Length: 190
Image (cartoon, rainbow, N blue to C red; front, side, top):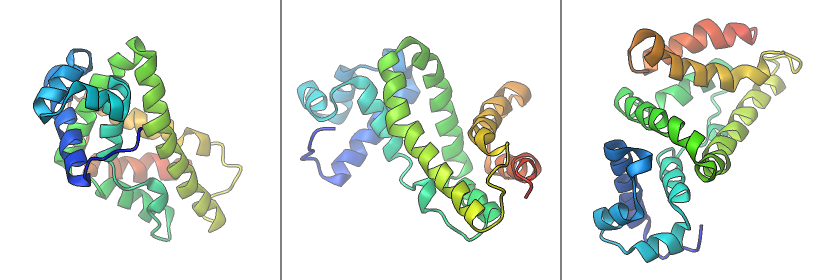
């Protein structure tokens, strides 16, 4: 991202507008013209600041998740997972799930979006999760050779995606906390 001259407040407003538009029209129909109109800015400014639609969308998604997983440290793995899940209320969780479902199709159609998602959202989250799990290993809660460690992201993403498919219900805190307690932690031997 280029050096910004936007105030943090203005940047936050712009990212919120991008996410609102994304929810309203989906990724494919989202245009920089629409973002410019919604945010009362020029398309040239948007391209100068973010370079592309995928970069702007993913940066808006990242801005929506201000707490890094690596920053959460309650002193126990169970506490860390619960704190991660409790940082977002059910309403926001449902909105985020809807956004990610909408983007899941677009990722297959746009290599640029896929790359931006990996670099700006997925890799930082994976690094944070690795740090969270490493601390649990360092505290002696987990064995470093536990074969389930490498599947934690798959388990969590799978739970989020499968809830809607299997039960036709939005994911919420209660479901994810129960899932962590019933599936993830036992798989890790906790």
